[in-house]
Amino acid sequence: MPTISDVYREELEERFETWEPEDEEAIRVKKLSQSIPEMRELWIAGEWLADKLRAAGADVQQVKDVCFAYGQRCFGSRDVWSIAEQALRKFEAGSPDQPGLKLAEEICREKMPQLFDR
Image (cartoon, rainbow, N blue to C red):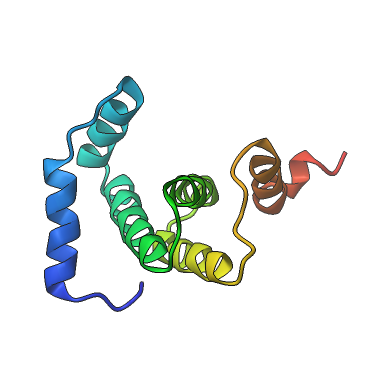
């Protein structure tokens, strides 16, 4: 986990608490995040990532794409903070993950190669 101040951590927590989901998918995410601590941490790390991306000059679409890809990369992982840091480094290096089916397949191949070794 990156070093973040207690005040900033509290700000991220407060953002989660005051977040008003606008669509059905976001409502489901918030409900899951309220009941599953790992989902809440994924959300908080994602907010941290979005802040860092904006500070690095990312536009709105880039923030959405990098954060979506971050969420995909978090599949089956408990270390969401290292994934968020990696996503930021990739963006800063000019080679962010592109979200979507190709990334999903890549992640599945990495985490479950036995499914593809037939």
